[in-house]
Image 1 (cartoon, rainbow, N blue to C red):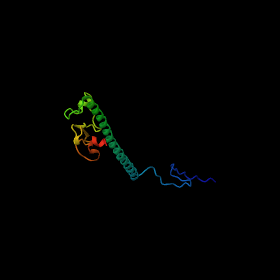
Image 2 (tube, rainbow, N blue to C red):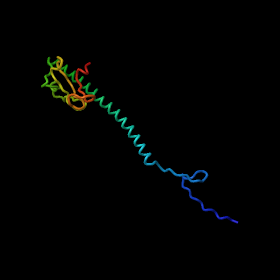
Image 3 (cartoon, one colour):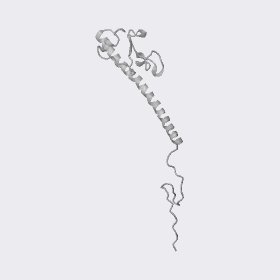
Image 4 (cartoon, helix red, strand yellow):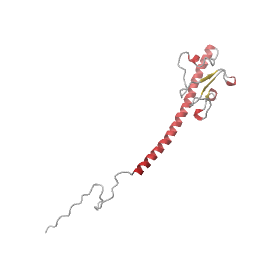
Length: 149
């Protein structure tokens, strides 16, 4: 005699083990897990951004010092040709004679003073990132005497 067939249970893929018992399914990540991953990524990005910005600002300071060195070279050539340094009123425009006068790495004008302090012929300075006299760190003034040492 034939026995009736038991109805087949339909098992979705991923929900059964080899012995046929169903497993609880994990279809994705929970909201908490996603938030933890995002928090970790943001923390790493902020640490990297801080390091990169620090290097970027330090490179601006070094770029300004190099630009000041080029201006000093032009001032020396001007002094040899004219037998005098330009006055404060003449400024760097007299040295560059119609060319664009270079600016510091932050886009501010260099400050030229003649005669300079301590008996120097002239002084050249950049007011740093903030463009205001004084300051600390990357806002500090960069003086010609500081780069010639």
